[in-house]
Length: 200
Image (tube, rainbow, N blue to C red):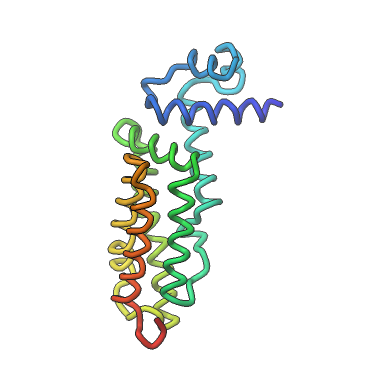
């Protein structure tokens, strides 16, 4: 029961932080949204800062488990079309999973206030993606599927426009389908430009 209440508090905190930011959210409204009194929240977390840090820990674990990470790479694709399909599965998850969308909003809002949010924003919006695709592209080069090049530069060239289009989906959700189509077209174009013709 205590674990369930703790999870409910974190879920409500994520929603409020994503809407109002950290400074714009107080324990009173958080507890009211759950039908609790303030002391009911403080029974599980000693402060708003403790809720914030627990939420960031949960975000990292959830994202790593469902999306992957440089330490837990998805299988290296066996073709450039497989690269596109893998990319689309990852993008579909990241633009449609409500927890991930709210997490991205929280990190975007709080990256200028909180050092840990800044580090996580850099990792999730830039370096984590490029590190992950550096490993994927190095593996595809080993398989002879991509022409030999600097895999880290290729990863940056590949992930930056995709990341920009994901942020567009957050800002303007009505453009999600259009953005997804652009990402698919871009991924296929990338495969044509950098793929080895004998294997593509």
